[in-house]
Length: 329
Image (cartoon, rainbow, N blue to C red; front, side):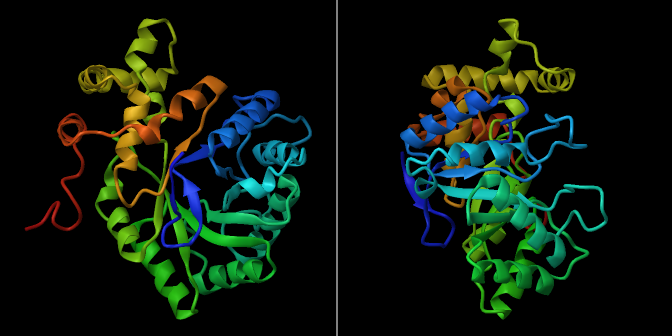
């Protein structure tokens, strides 16, 4: 497994992040444990979750949130040096209960949400605490004050963001700099061959501030995972996925044909394409099964030729470059 720095920090992380969104909802606990064990053995040293992951699995909970964190917590509790071998990342923002302050990024909610995540994860610290979305109703001075307090208390180490616009990233960083803080270590954004909007302003902002990009949905909700062959084999997806397949069928046919020509699986080509971008720290592998994890482990080793990269741009064109050059003279 290859490793790189998380943005401009000194923390070195694997080029694949183990995403655990499926744990507790689509993947049972026993399988989740095997996936985490195999990921650890393969050299993946950063696990990503969120307080809302896991789905409604318990009858005594209105929403069932926190289940993914609880599964990770029980896995960590087995010992064997598991906690010391990973950088543990989770998120805050989404509603966890029905009260008016049980969501978003007030200092009140950040403190309570962090304490709850620590309890579920059965650990005393979170290595990367990420804001799951921007909260433009809360001043950045309040957000950073809350995060700085958690850092002083040793409850979190780094702060990250997710789903931020370029100007949100810039605002966050300038406020952090005014407070003599490091600011954001990383940003999680929707980014894959079919979704390239972040190339306009988010990626340039991240490069400017030295923030690492961790793309989520790197395989485009399954579209880039060889979906045509899977459909032919009788593995039908949801109606929404089938609609997307039909809308993009010509592109998918060209893409899967190209992958066949270079002898790589579509999923690994999609991951390798992301890792080719120097702003990308690591891509999230969010397997439902052990087999999916094993298949993704090869992705960091896949090197795409310039000719292949050019062909991928033809099949899946981006927004035309970075703003404002992409749309203005």
